[in-house]
Length: 256
Image (cartoon, rainbow, N blue to C red; front, top):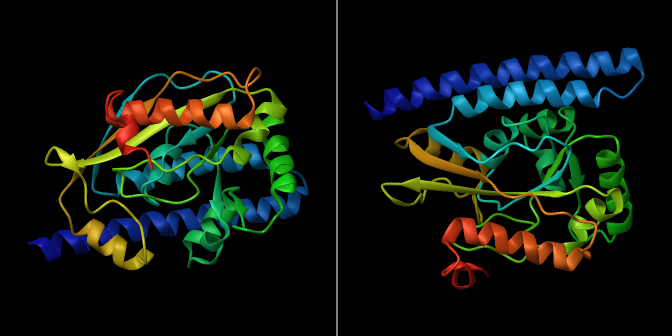
């Protein structure tokens, strides 16, 4: 029975990925023909596709809070690659991702066609990256970054890198903090985290073979960026997300 469930889920996921590949190829062709920026279209189609992808994953989703009415820089804790479809289905967003993702079979190409911005760890080009992110925000496009810089097991919250938040200050946009957590049987889900030496295929098969898990997403109070420096902004966002994930009394104990 479990094998049948796995095969059915895998078949559904493959159909969704085939649809995504078709959409991405169409957008790529339109981009070459139009010879102009189609980022708004990329974001809308990406949101539609990510909603289909999220539906194909074994999660039951609950969202709390209000979606921002103005373009903002979204910042979230990072547990798994599944954060991207679950958050990306909420609004037209672009993501900042580590450069390694671009080399993932199919997923990397889909991410690139969706307008994902890639960062090379240790590349020393933080100034150029901040300019690129700022340009994106100044054109009224929403952007989501994971300021921890890597994933965690969901039971700790790593330090937020303030340099990634400079673009919000330079662009005069607020931060939209988001807390995401995965629960199974009333405790932290051990299957959802994508950490360590995990590879995408092995993680995907474990996930599709598991029971449905609960995912809770909290859209927290926006944080104005105009009166804070980047480190203050990072600490404020970190405290808000830690409080949402673990409660004010336990936030410091869980923060790494």
